[in-house]
Length: 229
Image 1 (cartoon, helix red, strand yellow):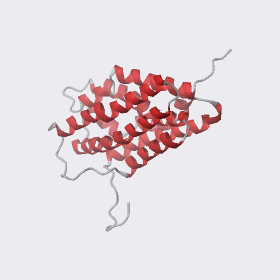
Image 2 (spheres, helix red, strand yellow):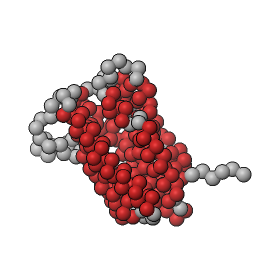
Image 3 (cartoon, one colour):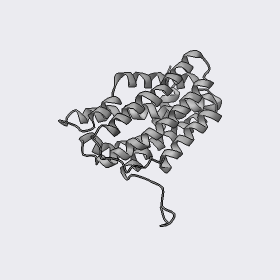
Image 4 (cartoon, one colour):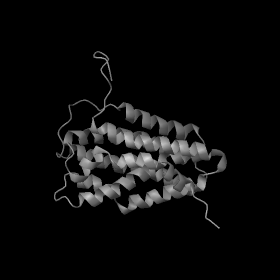
């Protein structure tokens, strides 16, 4: 008798085309071999810091709606990690002298950053718990998948300028957290919301791809005085 395919295994397969696009991202290719423009990396980190604030809110909302204490504790701990631990790493990298200085103005969320955060927070707040859990999973899983490949390539580059960031997403603890998140999503899956879960997972996966794509071109809001996008 063939074992049933888990929700997460099915979701991963359904998003194969988007994940292949992630693997082709110029941002990740340049990051892996250490040639990424430091100004592009600064832009990425600034946007990611803004994203993590929203992601932590989404995880906190999910924690409050979790069906049991263990699930609530995991999402709450993950929210703390996003808001404090990962944000601290970003701040250290931004202020550590490795990157060119900013222009002195506070970073503003790009259209992609705002769209991604809005999707996660709205889904975590208003959709069924299982759908919210599916929406936040790609941030764990796509990062872990990309981080493993990045680390393999980056280790071949002596004096890699972004080694600290790459190492953070290939950390065994991060991969363990990703496995736990997958287990919680599979445990929450049920037939009546399965398609909504797939949609939430797919949208978030597309945003993961777009986040790196738009970071590479340092996406910002168009100037209304100039016109055009």
